[in-house]
Length: 74
Image (cartoon, rainbow, N blue to C red):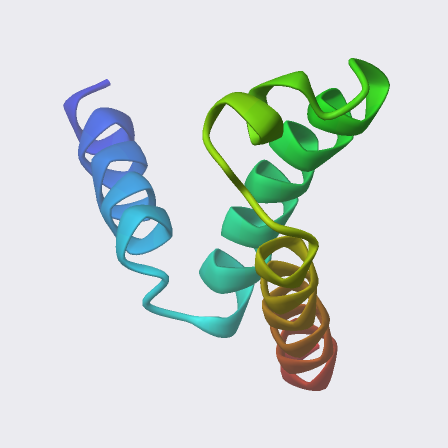
């Protein structure tokens, strides 16, 4: 059991750092969920936090890059 927790911890650290194309892709999916939730509620938290359409577009470009990088790693 200790080894599996150790491996899970290693994978989580890799995810947090975006240390591989797969980890970066997983992080992009995590960020997409927040964007989807904001769209669902009409962008309410974006307005509260003064997030501009250009900010969302810039983030979307990172999603595309990480998706392509993960695909190349397969």
